[in-house]
Image 1 (tube, rainbow, N blue to C red):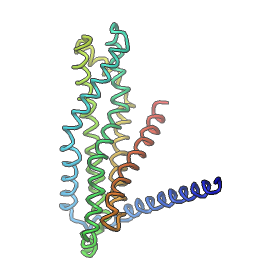
Image 2 (spheres, one colour):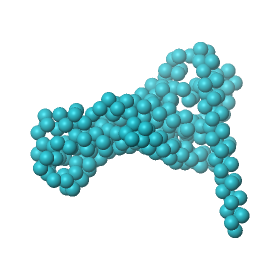
Image 3 (cartoon, rainbow, N blue to C red):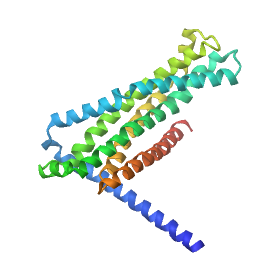
Image 4 (tube, rainbow, N blue to C red):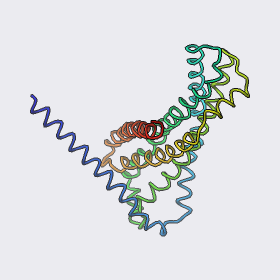
Amino acid sequence: MKKNILITLIRRILKALDGVKSFRDFIISIFVSFKSLQYLRFRSLYSIAINQTKFTGVDAMSIIIVIALLLGGTVIIQATRNFPKFGIEEFIGNLLVIIIARELGPLATAMIVVSRSGSAIAAEIATQKQQKEIHALELMGIDTTLYIVFPRILATVISIFSLIIIFDLVAFFGGYIISLSTVFIPLDIFFASLLDAFSINDFIITIIKSLLYGTLIPLICCYYGFKPNSDFEIPIYVSKAVVRTLLILFVINAIVSALFYF
């Protein structure tokens, strides 16, 4: 019994190591393919990046705004219910910055992008592969790794950074509106407490998380999008893309926060 468990564990570890090696080779192939960037038409890359930015960023704004309002309001409700109402205006800014700007804002935004755009990227590439569209591009002499992955990375980085800023601002505004129903905080004092709570580290960490999330999400989803060898495998690898991207995002979020705030 113990021997079977040990064998199973070893097999899973070896399989995980093979997956890491395969993903590493995929990343290396992207860097190698940059030498063919000069042969690609700028207009085609620009068109892909613009369309991906619209889908990932602009089209996701409505759900980002709704979730940000709800989260911002929830944070204020919990604060006003569980902390003394007298003097709450002194630490409400710190509370919102710590919970929303540092953690929930970037992470919730990334989760929405993964579930919405990441899954779409993986499914789109897998479908194109099965319909021989990627093979047709290769026959035309186009480096498909660079052509498909690079514009999506660029678009996702821009989209996530913009969405995080929007998420934070809407969450702060929603939190303030909700707070008026439970405790009155003058607008000038509320924004002054927010500005006092912000530090240069908060801005730097937002940029770093945007770059990391914006790079990792399309990288992982494109990697799994190239994996299916049949139509039956498409939903399997799309599911793997979403689940494993979310797992890695949580790990990266914890590491970055620990490096900056501990």
